[in-house]
Image 1 (cartoon, rainbow, N blue to C red):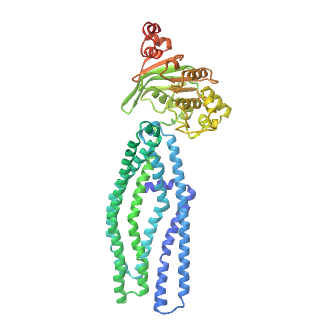
Image 2: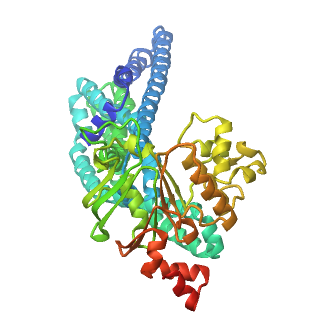
Image 3: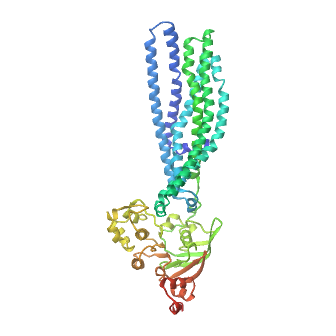
Length: 584
């Protein structure tokens, strides 16, 4: 836990360090001030009431009031300072964690659930804030209050004080036992919370699929199951606490009994004055209350420890893919692509095997093949979302592992079949990769993607707010906005992964004509299933089971009468002699 506290401290801006220490010192000071009024109560009883001397009464009461007001004012200042400091730390942590996630590689997002990451960014971070704003000063409060009260009471009557604190070792044993029981249960509860958040996030993101398959009842039951598991884990912790709480409460109340019984005997024997007994009565809570709080503080510390460990795991995680130490600078990408005997394995599954091809700047390469053949993986290796297992991917003759990621990915514009639109205007989505675009330039790229016409008919045109679920946009419309977004980067390499799969043939033909006449040099990398989308490519690759089984131009592949020819015959409805003729 010491490491976690140091980590929080390191994430606090330096200017807040002194403030935080000052606030904790105020906590110590206010603990000392707790002793003043019980001491004045002794004088009030012995020198005023017992002595029947009213002269000091007003002065004593005024001092007691002043001490109370000053203490409460200092406590207010302390709480405000600690809350400000804790918010500073959480702001820094949330910002740094978000920045960290921006540069994590694809394997990170493959292996971490969205709901779990959201839990770390919200609930777990809030427990880190709670430690700095509440737990740390409550620990100091409880410790100092017990220590100062004990020392002061020892000066009044060491015998009486020993009778009160004799139960402390028993309490410490109970606390240690409680701590060992509760920590693994907090870890389990944290995992159940993550699972519940993941179920909720998936349901919200996939609400259209749920409705399309009429699975609302199933989703309700699934969430109820996760919610119940979280509830049960919470109840286990509460039951553990409720098992130990009566013991702690009994020991704390035992102090009150000792105070009344033993204190009465000491007065009878002349070892205490009534005023001195009032001191013990006034401060016995200062010894018993820290014991009562001990269980709650351990609860909070365990929750903080569990949450901080999850956040630190995320903060210290290093991406497998990052800029190399001696990266080659490429001010401008030319667009040459070469796969040199590339193989790729995801965990133990081999996805690509011995892939080799070469594309010159400005050429068009098309890839087709059955689902799961590894087509999309080619794109991910080219943009270095993953690193090859064997071989090398070269862009402009340089291994992508030697490129700066910003320069590599900044030169590749990607439009995929599965479109994600941000909660922004249409203009903002198109200009996402190039924020310097003017509205006229955005319109130009939208026209080239056959999107301008339908955008103009939206409620607010290019200022219409869209999101990941769109605003009544069809699949084809969203694909065209995604293509416009890719073109707006003026990329040296344009990647289209089934980008026109949801548009009609006439629109597809229009887009292809526009792509042939782009106002900037561009190598095109097309993944498609339609022959019409790829027949004019300089190189067509057929990828099956992770291997290139056919390569060549449209006419060359037809003559081979392999997978490409079969697809051509099927899509164009050719039969018999006509089909054989196209394969001649």
